[in-house]
Each structure stands twice: as C-alpha cells, then as structure tokens.
Length: 227
Image (cartoon, rainbow, N blue to C red; front, side):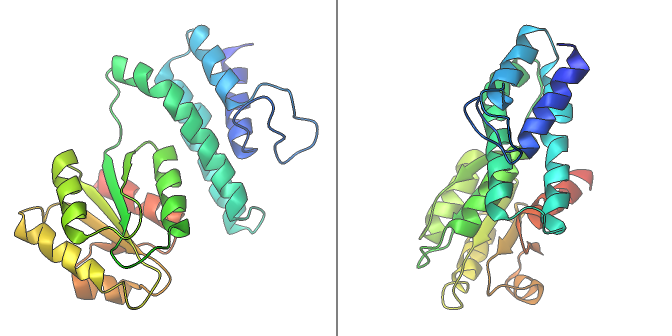
C-alpha cells in the first residue's frame, strides 16, 4: 500500500472509531479489515515518518469527528470511540516520536475536585486531549487541592483542567487556584468545566478559561500554543 493511501486509511478508521481489525466501525462491512493499530504498525514498517502518521493520519481526522459532532451526526460515544482510536495510535507512535525528537504538545493535569465523584465529562476531555497529542496526567475524582497542586509541580505541567458537576463542589476549584498561587505556580494555565460552571465563574475564581466541552478545551489549548 502506498504512503498516502495508508495515511488516508488510518484517518478513515479513526473517524470510524476502529482500533483493531476485529472492531466493527460505524459503516457496515469493515470487520476484519485492518484498523488503526494494524495500519499504524504497517506504516512504520514501510518507513513512513511518525510525525506524518501523527498529523495526517491521526490528529487531523479528529477535526472531521468534531464537525460530525457539531452537526449532530455523532454522539458522545461515537466521539469517544474515535478519540480512543487516536489514543491507541499514539501509544504505538510515542516511542518513535521521542526517538525522532518530536515532543508532545505539553503536559496536561486533569482532575475532578474534592467532594465530587463525577468523571464522565472529565474522562471525555482526558481522552480527547490525549488524542490531540498532549501528555495527560489524569488524577481521577474527589482529588484534594494539595494533591492536584503537587501533581502540577511534579510534572511541571503548563496546563491544568478542573472538573465539577455540582454547585456545592465547584467552589473547591477556588482552593486549587489559590494554592497554585501560594506555590508560585501561577503561570500554569487553568481551564475549568462541568455543568454548573460558566465563563463568569471562571473569571470570578481566577481560572484562565471556561471550556464547555472537550472540543472547546482543545481549541483553548491550541490558542495557548499559538500565543
């Protein structure tokens, strides 16, 4: 298979949410055909540049997924399946990218704040951002402020995402931001999200951004990179 055809097939299978050959995909008749895992390995075996596979095969295809989501053609499970396919490809590519001196786009620490056990939104953002090429350190749910700040410090993370689904727990985001400042980590950019949060609340507690969903978080990160 020629390089361009391989890259197009990788991108197609990301949009189909197919990780391995046994996966069905959204269209009929794809089962048992090579999917992202097999095609990424084949591309590497044929000498295709890991960075080309990353950009032309994996990450650009998520733009198509985003458009389908915005048009209502894809639901959240469809979007997650595509992001997980990108994540599987990234797991294969990462050692090759590091060997070639291609660094990740940055470390992103994410957590649901203390007192809150909801993780669906956080997990969606986590998977999508990993698929966009960032190193994601997911601390889970019900995470104390001290632990979040320690993780930011340990990983020297330039980005932090905080999630909360309750009006009673979203206030705990303030403690995290205050502790970041106390530790001299005010340069870490913080985005918040979750049903009760808003741009006004983000501004009130000193967060850098409010992201309504995973695509908004990715757009925000792109803007930070471009700044």
